[in-house]
Amino acid sequence: MSEPVKLDIMSDPICPWCYIGKAHLDRALAAAPDHPFLIEWHPFQLNPDMPATGMDRRAYLEGKFGGKEAAVKAYAPVVEHAEKAGLKINFEGMKRTPNTLNAHRLIHWAGIEGRQTAAVSALFKAYFVETRDIGDVEVLADIADAIEMDASVVTRLFATDEDMQDIRDRDSHSRSMGINSVPTFIVGGKHAVPGAQPPELWAKVIAEVTAAKS
Image (cartoon, rainbow, N blue to C red; front, side):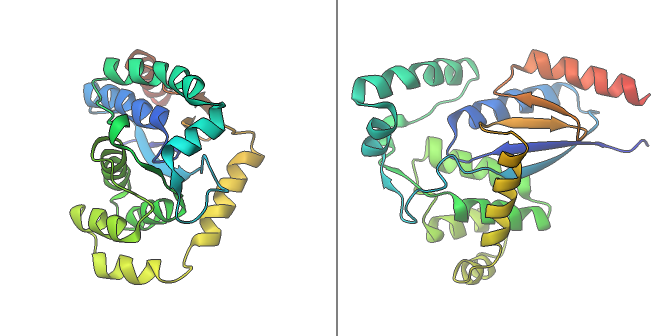
């Protein structure tokens, strides 16, 4: 069997385009079960300066986009593309925008146990569907438990600064490479595929990568 091709994904679990982009990729991968990719998720914080406890979502959006009407307008394409991807996002239920540093720590630890994509999926569901505060370490420990990680170990790790600087350094490294928005997918360490690309594009990428390997 030939060596897999690395697919590195820069993402943030509160990024709706990352959620949509993963749904598109998942559909393409499901249609090509013999795909060559070995997937690794990497941290990228949309709001690295967010207070540790997060902030009121409405205040955050209105501050970011310059008022309620501008925020609604900015999110209209998100709603449209989410529906096309078969995703339901409960924007009405979201009350806070969290700091995602701890969520990225959980994704990192899940990767060590071979559960990284499960962690990413669970975080997207918790935030966009269940409107849970994924900046809360108790919520994160519960998510860890749901994907068969040891919640007590995760809770103890959250009480330390374990891997905090590593997450920040990896985020900074991505920015130094010129990545300034997510999702960004790096195929085989060479080719960047930015944005929430449709399944059809991924089907072409999979076919091209598979052909190049044969």
